Image (cartoon, rainbow, N blue to C red; front, side, top):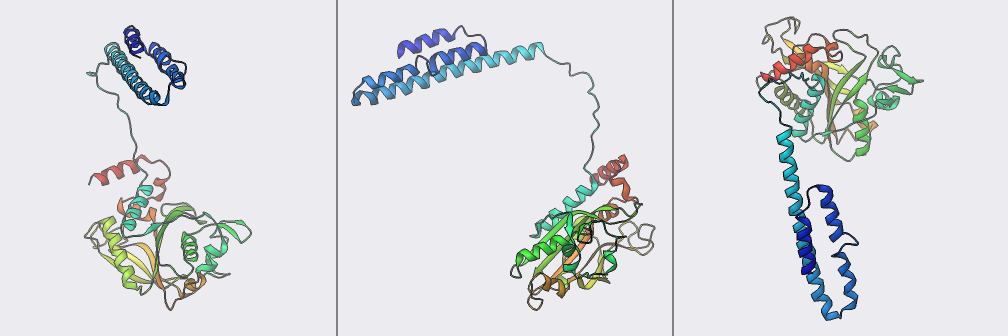
Length: 344
């Protein structure tokens, strides 16, 4: 064994590159290498000698590996030094200006809302964009013949049963049905929705909606108000004022519009808030008893509130954008506007 180690040290002195290094390693530690062949000697020994021989064999393997690894690092270091010497670059010249982009504002807006709700214990849930009529309308207390089902408003794919979802509310329905009337729910469902709108500065046939749902026992409208107040302050600043206004939705009772004080004019009235001093950013309300029943929740034991934001609407208000189409047309002003607001 000592002879093998001495021979290895002598052979390795002449190694100049990685290829030679690999050959040396194979010659000594490969399957047919000098050290590996010593294993065959084990069968010739008595049981008492096998233990002693095995310990010596492990030591020579460790010594050989250490010698080879030390030499390998030495070769790699020398190769690197040669490269640095021969491939140096002149860093005194000015660098090339590389343009860079910014996250899409709508995507960033969705992430901001998700972060706030997750900090309050809400789950982020996804669902299909091609939906069944019963989930998109029927179970949401929107019966046959309701104007929202009109073919002028909804993208139907197969007859009147399969459609592109016009809201993310079906994800709420699916989540409640999984709860089977026994589990409390706290979730939001951001995603694409589709409606037959003509594209203009404030409308699009496709838009991002962020809806939320909380179902539990002893839930009241004041819980919804507090939740909305937290969201508004997180997105638009701690000095943001909020208010509720009565409204009507088929799937909530009572229903409300949720407004924030116009941060541009501080409530005095401007073209952004249409001289009202307030900007509507969401619709909400207490989950209608019929919707709870449709999902096997007893409305005498369970209550809940639901709400919906338009991600584009939130972004337009926060970043003072007056045309929704800039989000989808690679308008460079969007990137500039976003970077400026983020810096502020």
